Length: 156
Image 1: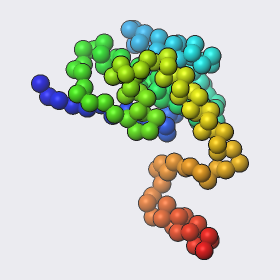
Image 2: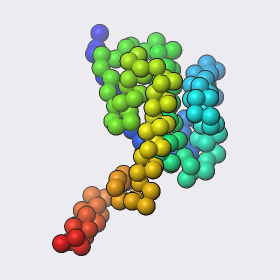
Image 3: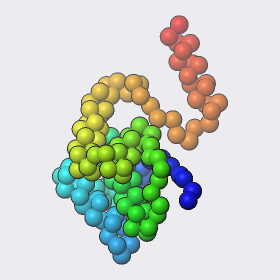
Image 4: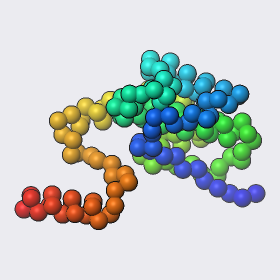
């Protein structure tokens, strides 16, 4: 048997229409997982993924629950298809919660509550302070270096 690990993504992997092909599967794993998450936080996550608005999808409180639910649903599908159990599970930032749920260290419901609260706190801490944390996605390295250099030079 080959040993392998699963690594779960963090915030920033979400987008409108994500997982669309999985929601049409006959086994209802994705629908049931997202129904469970939606019931927990009292908001229709499937509708948000499908129709937006994108601004709301990218709010941390919703993004984080969506990414967690997506990871758990994919793992549940993996198990349903008789995928081997990974030897190790880990996650990047928010993905740590997915790893904890999928390794049975915490319950999905508990993780949903924690992650929803975590997302709210992250939103609150960045209000009127947008430079506290930024994700750099799809930008050339040279552009990032130029912007960072200009900020450092302004502070001197």
